[in-house]
Amino acid sequence: QRYWSARQRYAEQGLAPVRAALAGADFIAADQLVREKVNPLYEEANARAVELLNLLSNQARANFNEVNERNELIATVAVAGIALSSLAVLLCGLFFFRGAVLPLQSAVTALERIAEGNLSGENGHDGYGEPGRVMASVSMMQLHLKVMIDEIRCSSGSIREQCARLNQTMMNVAQHSEEQHDRVYQTVDAAAVSCDGLKRLADDAEALLLLAERAGAWCEPAPAPALAETVAAAEPALQAAPTPAAEPSDLDWLDLEPEPCAAQEDNLAQRAQGLAAAARIEAFSMSDTMAQMNQVAMLIVENRGDVQDAWAASQQLESTAAELDKLVKYFD
Image (cartoon, rainbow, N blue to C red; front, side, top):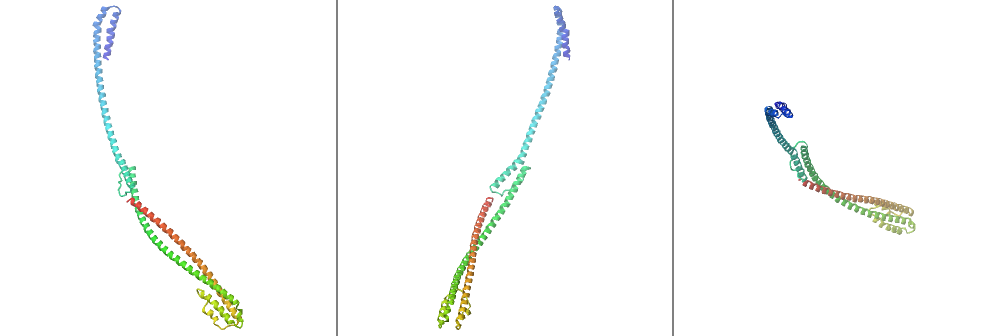
C-alpha cells in the first residue's frame, strides 16, 4: 500500500509537473522539478519498491519453506504409508501362504502319496476355510480308503477260502456223480439183459401156447410121448428167464397123472397164456424202468455239466480274488 501511494505521488507530483513543463518548453523549470521533486519521489518510491520486494521475498521464502516442510511431511507420510502397506501386504502374503498355500501343498502331497498307493502317512488339519476343508476331505478319503482296503483284503481271503471249499465240494460231487452215472448205466445194462430174457420167455410161452393149441394129438392112443416132447421143448424157455415166472407149485401139474385130453389142453393153454402175458407185462415194466433210468442218467450228465460250470465260476472267483490281492498289495 505504501509502495502504491509513493508511486502515485511520484506519478502525480513528480512526473506530471515535469511533463507539463516540458510541454510548455520550460526546460529550466522541468530540470528544477526533476531535481527537487522527481528524484526524491523516485527515491521514496524506489525505497518502497525495495521494501515491497523484500517483503515479497520474505513471504515467498516463508511460503517456500512452509511448502517444502509440507512436502517433506507428505513425502515422509507417503513413505511411511508405503512401508506400512508393504508390511501389511507382506504379512497378508505370509498369512495367505501359511493358511492357503501350505495346506494346499500338503493336500497335493497327500494326494500324490495316495495315488502312489501309500496310505500310511498322516495328514495334518491345518488351514482355514476352503484349504482346511480340502485337508479334512483328504484325510477322510484316506481313512475311507484304508477301511475299504481292509474290507477288500478280508473279502479276498473269504473268497479264496470259500472257493477252496467249493472246489472240494465240486470235486466230491463230480466223483459221486461219476459213480452214480456208472452204476445207473450198469443197472440199465442189467435191466436190458433182464428185459431181453423176459421177451425171450414171452416168445417161448407163446410158442408153448401154440404147441398147446396143437395138442389135440394127446387124445390119440399114445399121448405120453407127444406131451413129453412138448414139456421138453418148453423147459429151455422156462430156464432162460432171469427170475422164475411161476412158483414151483405151478409146475406140479407136470408130475400129476394125466387128465383127460380136453382138460389138459385147456389147463396148459391157460398157463401158457398167463405166462406169456406176465412176461410181456414185466418186459414193458422193465422197459419203462429203463427209460426212467436213462432219464436219471441224463439228469446226472446235466448235473455234471452244472458242476463243471460251477467249477469254472469258482476258478473265475479265484481269479477275482487274485486281482483283489494285487489291488490290496498296491496300497500296502
